Length: 396
Image 1 (cartoon, rainbow, N blue to C red):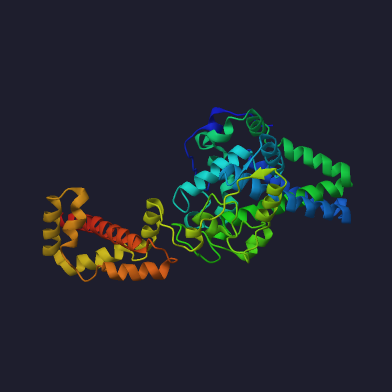
Image 2: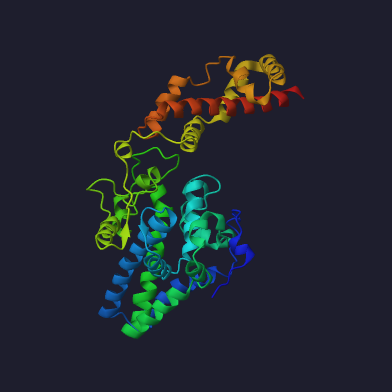
């Protein structure tokens, strides 16, 4: 059982390279997959299959309702006792501790699809975003400052210290209930299935599906993933309104995790379930500055600023570049963009053209004009910075 160390609780984000694959904590992950082949010798019984199916749905619910919607996003409230029960069941999936999972998920939302997001297919590719990150030394760390609201509970810290204990106890129960097939098929097969069902939200839900909302990242709604994860596949909805206990916003968006939470609400076990606001449902909510900046960066990058700078440099010629360099040398860095824009070159897209590109690339949003304006600024800044480099290179 792992004990807390200063390194496991450090607040910084440590993202080691994909080549850093020799790390002791990855061994259990590999072993769990390999042990599944033991069914060749133990056999597969009806009781073991039924146990495995039941444990899959129970634990995928615990991941969605517990690790994700409650501990990561505080989408509803519950008692301290039921909070502990949720944590124990979720932790029986062997996906590390509730505090580690929620802390890293909060980091994911803070840095979604940026260079600091370890789960981003855009940044690291599908395989690494799905399972490769597990083999990175950086995945062991936990930003404890992200979890100050739950780290104050001694029982949750105890679960953090003994993160594999719930999984071990469940494995023993499976062995006692259905013998060796119960252990291999009931526990290990269902554990691997829960692994990859969960990991698909990190990977496929940022690659395949539809985007209803502008979220500043690649999150998508995927109905198939919603089925196998009990509603977690409405990922674009979730990124648009993270604190909602309901992720399938409309009646046709299958979200059994929310349905079960409403049942638990009637039983008095949970309460104050948060739901999407009318503005969000109608896609009329104003976006925050961080989402606007990220969405604008996507639009600006779609114009390939380096290519534009090369075309502008060719059009200006040496004398034009010299003039540009002289003008920029008199300007402060923050106003260099304004100096560059005065050259009025046809190679630079107009703000109106950028609005059209933004509408083509992104979902509809009342913040579209703000996104386009910011994209225009970012594009001019990127092209201007590249032109400064070219101008100085041609001077020597």
